[in-house]
Length: 404
Image 1 (tube, rainbow, N blue to C red):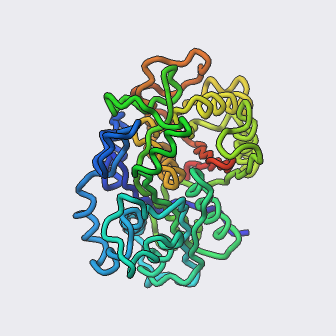
Image 2: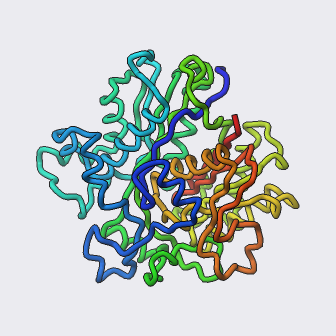
């Protein structure tokens, strides 16, 4: 087994901005990226709000992607490419100096966004736009990388699974560097109607920025967000050889399948607790070493209740002392991108010793009594942090990050 797996670069696009620094400063400030939907006419929908990427994105991405290639990609795939290129630049990687057979790409992909809101789809590009492997393939093509490139689909845990898979490639000496991430947008009429039919989305449309309220008594469902997150994972040896800045160590992970229900989590968060325990066991980190948990925290009745119960089950008396926050209160739920976007937020929390808040926690649920870092961010040393992702179908992931 190779040595440590470290993080040397990150790229992010979300409703809070088109680059890493803008996103981080908005997250620390407790800014909401949720607004009224502009991508289509949502006036007939029960839910009329979402976290859309800033409108400047299309002009922004022209600096990254050639026109012909851009025409073969959906808007979501273009988000992925922009985040990937930002992450590579942030990591200071020159692939001409790397062994490209040992550089890999893994993306968490629920769908490519080739929905009713996608424009300019033609018979010539419809196949390329719909290929679920398109994101990893385009990134690999861009840098002419010859290590494995593939996509993973485990619903809302997809890009967390991608990080776990990238970790394994490096630990098993199959790769020196892996570009991992995900991108998603389900801001379209048909998917919003579908989630409304499942009573999964918030219908508190006014004001939009107040709708996503994880752990609050008046939460009524999640708010859709869109965006992309990409992380450069690298072997410690490769990072040191390049003189790279190391932002964090990915210390280990826990993955599990609940085998229980296509939509609902296991009662009392048993599956979530099992996953967190498994993650900690993989790293040898003790319960009292965990300084922060970036919660899945969707703002749905069951997730927030069961995730709270799961944390209590795992940490016992320690649970009340651990700050827990949900980035989804600001970004919305970015589905296939969530695992990586929230992984980036967790890494930056460790790097900057700053915990981002759970906003909109105006009416705490009396049954949910942990420290959810309400409203404002908090300066605190963070040496070890968990990032949770739990998806429809019972796909669970907990990632463990450690200060390098």
